Length: 119
Image 1 (cartoon, rainbow, N blue to C red):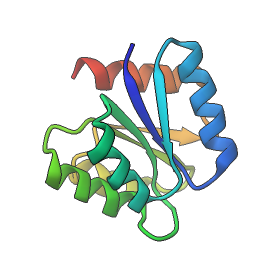
Image 2 (cartoon, one colour):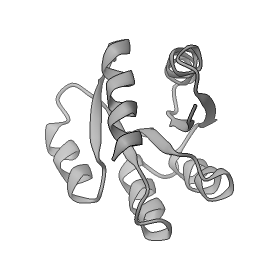
Image 3 (cartoon, one colour):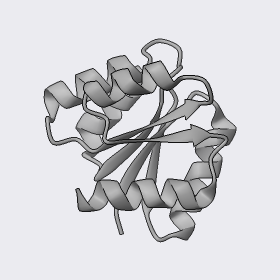
């Protein structure tokens, strides 16, 4: 069982991902924006992170950069809407290890988490 941080400003997306991950046996913690994601990551030290890109206060790319600055080994996959391919490439360059397109298929989320955990 892994501790996974789910970050999304949309409560229903966090709920959907949290339910799926909990049913797969993982412990889930949540944050609703990038600033909270950084604070929660540093406090909780999750095994991996699923993080939305577009959020208020601090977007996912900024949060990714800050998390990776504090923990270069952080395992982060970005959650992205269709049509954000250029942003996804930027995220990969900044250290994201995977991405999942929203609305996500449950199997794709679990596969991304499994890849993060074995990396």
